[in-house]
Each structure stands twice: as structure tokens, then as C-alpha cells.
Amino acid sequence: MAAGPTVKQLLEAYPDKIRLVVKNYPYKYRDYSRIAAAASLAAREQGKYWEMHDLLLDRSPHLDR
Image (cartoon, helix red, strand yellow):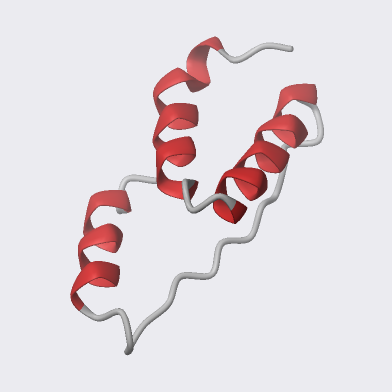
């Protein structure tokens, strides 16, 4: 997400005023998109959503099953 850094800054600056809701819409023609969505949810439960988000975006051209 191109707005990622700005969103992170806003969340840190206004933790009691805003929240981010992320909806996963895996691309149905790519098997790995469902796996990536599940990995993102698991990372969120561990408090590491943004780390996983950034990792997946950095490696998205190379993702494969």
C-alpha cells in the first residue's frame, strides 16, 4: 500500500482517535494470495502485521507457492 508510511504515522500519532481496518481480498487466480492473507492475519495476532505487510509487498513480484 503506497499510503503505508502515512497510515503508520497517523496510527501512532492518534491511537485513541483512529483505527485501521484491513480487509483481505485474495486474488482468486493466484494460490499464494490466500496463503499471504492467512499469514497476514497470523502476524496481526502476534502484533507483527506491519512487518508481514512490508515483507509481502517487498517480495510480491517473487511470490510463488
